[in-house]
Amino acid sequence: DTGVSQDPRHKITKRGQNVTFRCDPISEHNRLYWYRQTLGQGPEFLTYFQNEAQLEKSRLLSDRFSAERPKGSFSTLEIQRTEQGDSAMYLCASRPGTAYEQYFGPGTRLTVT
Amino acid sequence: EDQVTQSPEALRLQEGESSSLNCSYTVSGLRGLFWYRQDPGKGPEFLFTLYSAGEEKEKERLKATLTKKESFLHITAPKPEDSATYLCAVQSNFNKFYFGSGTKLNVKP
Image (cartoon, rainbow over all chains, first blue to last red):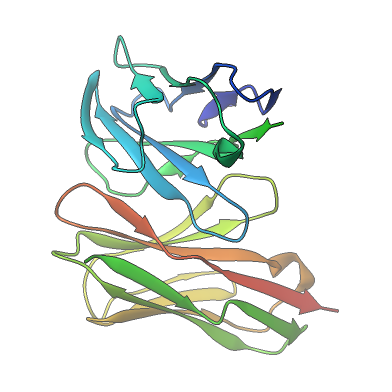
């Protein structure tokens, strides 16, 4: 399978715990995006990488959120001190530099209890 | 402010009953307009990209069109397997993607 993969697919955590999600983009795609999606809403942009450089960051991304893409390949999204309001689907997408359409992974469903 | 609005929020059709979904947008410098299909619990699946007013794209029973202020996704003779949420997104000059809230389509046999 050569699509975008995300791990884990589901995560249940207690409030106050830290969680980390991983995204592996399509191999030749140098652009990588993270989104958050809540029920009944479209995905909301969180952050954007071009290769290993984080070029855009949404105002929605509080200082409890951090993302990295250390070698320009896979990326991680960490949420520290989780809150119930963080419960959502976290989606990763990638695209090549030559086209604008993004291809999405299956998402990580986070539930904070 | 860049914004994408989709209507209706939900649409129920009988199998074979054609209809259209609307996506209106305001964006500073449109780089592209995108349609996605999303099934429950899954990531969005790419359908079409439209770049300029007047452009049309087709795939099976779906046809997407674009004007300067809106896009339509026409569904011809839908089948139950077309049931999903259809999302519209735009990319601005500033490398950001803005999604609408989607139209949830339910096609009854």
